[in-house]
Image (cartoon, rainbow, N blue to C red):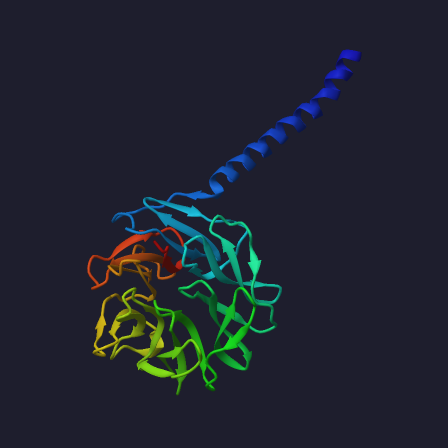
Length: 311
């Protein structure tokens, strides 16, 4: 009788132990697969490593692997520091978008802006001192810069328009951005001091990116003759000296967020629907800077806003 009682007493303990081991095994599996994610490269890997966002998470592509930077960091529109060891981004926390900085390995997360307004689309200056971003703290969206050492905030654009998506010139003297004027978006440049605002490309242009040699702007736009309501964006380049506009993509899908490789030979971009019949899937593609040899570098997520790591 005593032996039966002992057996009955041990059964729940054994079952609890087995359940605990199963839970521990599942946790260890999820932990081991949390940072490394399989990715299919049907047309080869990228020449330079890049980072992109998928469902508010940062992924890093290098060679033939894609790695989750951190499951604890929810980010949009990442921008590399000039040294390539930190990232600036915006994140929706505590009821609004703010600008943050984090080490590339996911450590030392720091909040940079503290406002009840909408602060987003960070862009790190080439000298590493400033971060440009857009904010509606004065009403319309304007471009601001914040000094990382002093915290000094400067409103760079003050026109009564929505100025968005800032990007620095390689020499750090100018900022390019998209601006909503007369119900259409166009591209403008302005000195980082806030002077000499100039229009560049005024026909439904978005998401500008400056080439490393500072001669060309890549941007997304709606091709002439396309239905504006469809929002079928393509990737274009604008030669700053000549004003020549060249169309790089000819896809019946949504192409956006171009980003130059460090040597200026390649452009990464969001290419929606490139590898699937579903129109809701977006991927990251890379092409030569003349628009040739488009290749998919990720096709398993809703990837967006790629940016190459500085070399």
